[in-house]
Length: 535
Image 1 (cartoon, helix red, strand yellow):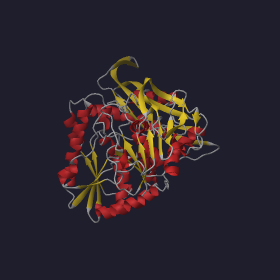
Image 2 (cartoon, rainbow, N blue to C red):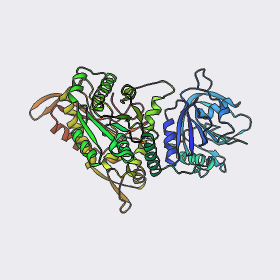
Image 3 (cartoon, one colour):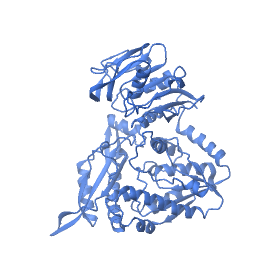
Image 4 (tube, helix red, strand yellow):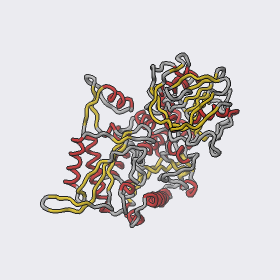
């Protein structure tokens, strides 16, 4: 299968490059800059990512270009472009001020294959502190902005291109076109990567990998583990046993609702209510990272106990997706929070690991789910943190605090599902392009607020109390914050511009119906600088 290799130099948007390539129905792999796969006949091109470092810093990541130069077409993005210029004999220098934000290509070599079908004065997104001041011999400028002379360059006699800006972000209007030009036209990508081909190939590979062995899969209720379960069920049927653990930190009624959904899918599911265990172990713990670790360890204990009851199991399956693996291999070594997974459990139990979704991004998982004809409400379910509501309660965990947050969260989520809005033009196109099922009528579509956003939930500020007035009495109760974001990649996110009428209705419902809450706030911070969760 054809593939593009993306060499990662530590940029926070490297994943986004991968997603954009996948959107072109072309397979790609993100590899550390020093782990280029040798002698892989499927490689058709190489992309070099950005980096937080400068090329002339001692700690900067360097590349042995003999592995790729002259063998594959190469596209360098930001740091990647600077690294090639620096390595091949050009000059890169710090700018007086950081170049950040929108710019326009005021001049470009219109017949260059990398810039084919670009609009005049195409908008691009800059984010760099250094700039290329001299190109290597044998290279030429192919695009400039008002302030960046070498916004893009090309080799005269080699298939090498560099761009100083970021085509992977949506602010670069012709960014997808640039990547299409490189991947499809220059590298010869056949664009044969699709959900249907993935399902057929993966089912065949799973049957070969697992054979007649028994497999255990830990379900979370999320789209990743659900799609993994359905894929495995299609491949091995009754030899799959799924375990769904209730840690007491799920959404309201989620344990029973999800079990019912899984049974309707024909899955063999064991439900385990371990909420008391988790409440006991979390008592008095407020620090988010400690919560994560306690919940992760507790999940492993429960899972191991239940898994031992399944005789002859040889495999542990997980809904691990590609971003999980990329983040766990971050070359800069910077960790913000630990991931909630079953790390170490396969070895401890003597099981082999099976990860059928390990090459997919989140949007691709949803496309595969639709290919498998799964219920839409499972496919469109918003991401939910592994530790559940534990990291949405600021303070220690008690069953009463969980109850309060569940009630407020349920009102918010049901409200998002039930509140319909009509969209047209570019807004409608974006929603349809994301795969949201909607019928076009008279140029308009009607969709719920829930289907327009990436993730939503409520956060209980349990260590904060504020004065309120309800009826003739003063109250001294907790505030709850509502958070809803839009995103295409989870690496960046913007707060959702929900209608004021909706926010007013939800706020009134929460305060009227949830005992313990007397104030509702709405989070209007974006990522960056804020994260999606409040932890």
